[in-house]
Length: 297
Image (cartoon, rainbow, N blue to C red; front, side):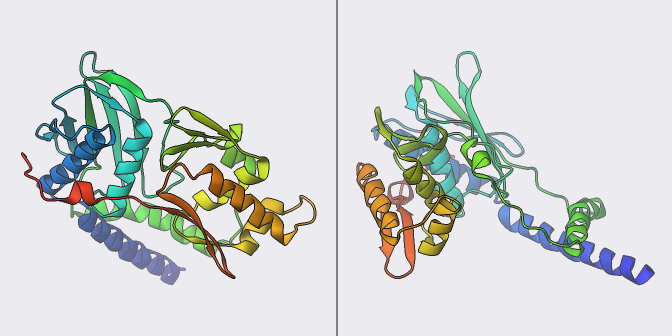
């Protein structure tokens, strides 16, 4: 028994040190974060066609809390903020955990906010289909505090490690997410489109595009893994399972219909990986935010 306890403690320490090391690598310096947040503010201006006004110096209000201000009033599309932050995160300009609040300058009320965590299930992204009217806004960004390299931190990291070990030794059970739970997730952003699975529709600017049930189910599967190949077998199983006989050409027909309904955004495409499956490709151009520019930090 003592040997088992010793083994568990060893695993706790190893996982703790690995987690702590990952946190060190992920927590950038204050100045590097200011540059990344200026990129975010700059891209927000470009998205509304403003290439002349400036992003004011990014302020570090306190440890882990930053504030982005703008020279002029602006209209903010919440899904654009989510999308830009996501791309900066994927390009390693932002860590994998942060909270963003869009605050009105006059009354200091939060007009929109979302929270990103390493686990997609724990991230909170409210419906972001409505634009915020033109006004003075500040974007506040909160990062988790840096972990200290002391013994207490090791033990705190060991708590989730113990839970991990417990579930490893338990008999694994397959967890299946029902279609209903996916539908309740609200709206999703796909490039310039807002996708409402529960309402079977896409919205592009002010245009409403109705989807069939099968088109909606196929798109839900593809958007769950953007820029990754989804096999024909997997699509067929998830969309047509328990729904009657599947005809091979049916999938191709629905994919063709989806392509036509997504054609208004040239950065979105559904590629046919011949003999394998399909891939929802979402291109994002970071060139505009990475070009040389003087930063006033």
